[in-house]
Image 1 (cartoon, rainbow, N blue to C red):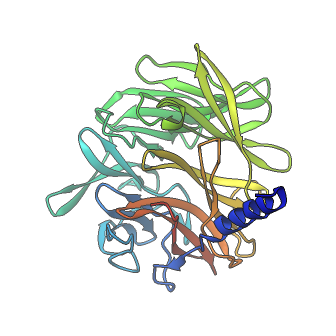
Image 2: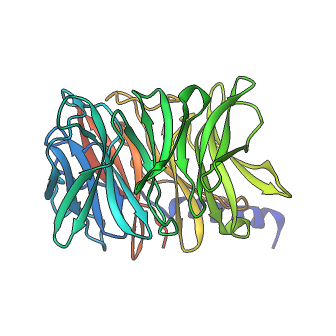
Length: 374
């Protein structure tokens, strides 16, 4: 085979591979209603969200990822979730939580006696849903929860005293609460498969990723390089011998990259950079998922470094593999120029699907995309 023939063959193969995936991006919710900030439980095959009428749960078809009720309003759990200013969500939506004790929903709730707020827990008792406030959570607003049965009890991260404090505790024991001022750390996210959470704290003026060990209440620094960090995750990765890695968003001047770090002999160092795969320069709302033993990231590509809910800015939804060699980048949304935000993952027997919200005239309309992973 001549060099020219070989080159043409390689170019043909690359072009063929690029064309093998065509995005399948479909609307699965009622376009006359809004489903803001939905969260999905693969274990229970359910979606939860809240709107001005309350906290709702809806079944998800485990084979297709479609909603049983297109408006999402199958079961009303709590009608007194007063965390809206008009129709605008004031705080983060509800979160599924998993521990050795089972699966539940945690959410920012209104106090019965006044217009203040607290954190409540909803759980299924047979066919009925019940909800109770968590003790000693007045002025607390939920951020996120543990997502692993390896935790004996659900851990929650939240802001308190009107966002002046960043706190964590375990649900069944208020005495485990530990807080520090948000000026000393924020953006906490529970690590997967280990006891603790990553968070962002400034060091020499730059936001760096730190880790807080909830077993002994000690903190350690992970990143020390340039650029402010955000959106940090600690996961186990089969691509790195099933060791823990940390990845985060690095907010550079004209773009956002994802930096990947690994610990060797007690020291964390950057081992990889995942760059924007699109002409849109900013990675927003990245989230990890695994399929067939491999690690991936789903991300929103945007013209802007932070999420905004304008109708008028185009976005794209992509997935990327953690695997450094022969990295997969795949655009899974269509070329429609509507606003696309908040990608979420759901695993079906035939492969992962990704949801995102289209912002249309103030409503949040749910889309479902195929990933092409099998």
